[in-house]
Image (cartoon, rainbow, N blue to C red):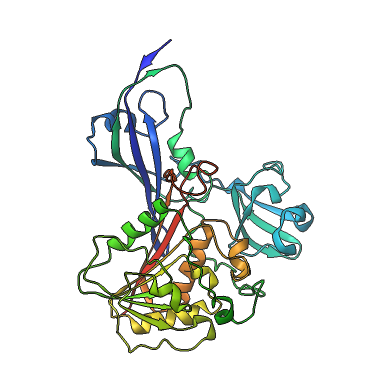
Length: 401
C-alpha cells in the first residue's frame, strides 16, 4: 500500500529548568514524515500547517515525554552487584550525584549491554543507592518545533519511523542537572590529572593549525555566540587559536585572543590583539577589573587544571552582567585532557562546567544548551564515515555585579 505524505526538515528543542539553571536541548531531524513518524501531543496535526521558519511550542507535564518517576526505581544494591569490568580507569567506587551506564548495575531491572545513564545517590557501608529513573522524569518539559525546510511529498513504500520524543531524550538530556539536595562528587581524588602533566607551553609550542570540529558544528557555536555579541564590544577569546568560531556578520568587535601559540593566533583574522598566557600556571589574568563586555571559550575548557580559579578571574575581568560562554564538543587532545572529563557522560560534562561557574561564585543566570543531529558537511574529511555533525554543548552565565 502506498501513501502520499507531507515532509519537512524540523529542529525540535526541549526546554526545561533544574534547580540551578535553564536548559535547552536541540535535535535536528532532516526528514520528518507527518504521516508516519511518531510526534508527541498535537504536533502531528499542527506542524504540517507551519511555513518555513515558523515555530510552535507545546507544554508537557513531568513524566509525559519520558517515563514517569517511580520511587520503586530508586534501588539499593551491594557493591558486589557493580560490574567493575565496565568501570573506567580502574575506579571501582561510584560517586554521589554522578551518572553511570545502567549496565554496571546488576539488578533484575538492568542488563549488561545497557548504556543509558543512571545516577548514584550515595553509599552507606557496602550499600549503594541508585536512581534508575529517567534523568528528566521529574521535570515539566516544553517541546518546541521549527520547520527549517519544507520537503516535496513522496510516495511512501515503508521506511524508518522516527519516535521524536524517544530519540531526543533517550541518552543525554537531564544528565547535566545536579540535584538540589545533593552535591555531585566531581572532585574526589585527582580529577585534574592528565596523561601528560609536562609544561603546557612546551606541548603547544608547535602550531596545530587544525579544525577541532566540523564546519556545521562551528556554525552552531557561532550562532550561539551571536546572541551575546553587539558592535563595539570588547571580547576576550579565552584559550584562543587559529579560529574563534565567531559569526561572520558579527563585525566591529575588538577581540583579544589569549592563548599559548602566537603562530596559531596570527592566523586568526578575527583577533584584534594577542596575549600569550598559560591559564594552567594559576597566575592572574593580565587585565584590569571589568575590562571586557563578554568572554568566550571554545572547545578548550577540558584542558583546565585550575578551572575554578580561572572562572573567578574571568568574573573579575568581566563587566557586571557580561556573559561568559563556554562551548565544547566530543573531541580533544588525549595527552592534555583532564582525567575526569574522559570519565563523564557526554551531557554530564555540561554539569561539570556548571559546577565551575557555581563554585567560582562569580556568575548568575546559568544556562546549558546542546545541539545534535545536524548533517556533517559533504566536504568534511570524515564524511561519509561519519554522517552527523559533531555535537555542540554550551554553558554560560553572567558576571555578578
